[in-house]
Length: 128
Image (cartoon, rainbow, N blue to C red; front, side):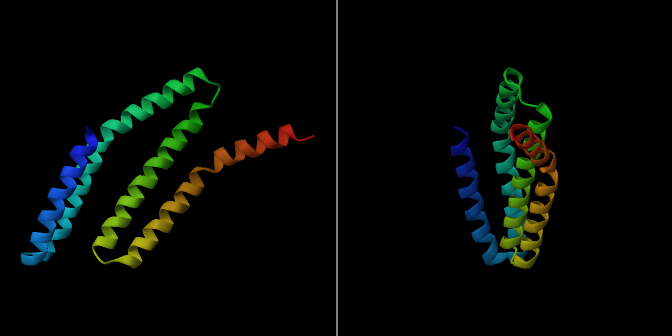
């Protein structure tokens, strides 16, 4: 199971980071970033299966595939933004973390405008 691998990497990383903080605190953030990238890599295999399933559902239904691509991109941006925010907070840079969070939200809102526009068009067509 992938979750066992992810938890194992996380526990090993935490132990390494705790030891590094005692002797070489400047390297602890590098260990944290490497562990985060490794965990994201382990999770990406599952993510490709989810994307395949969404594409399969899209081909069976009358959903615009452009909207599904946008939703997948938005999900990726949210995951990467959360990863960057966590690293900034781990580094003690809460101010930068909040700016990254706001930037990610703004990008997500701007990317979702075509979906919101299509939803409003549909509602307007339904209303007399």
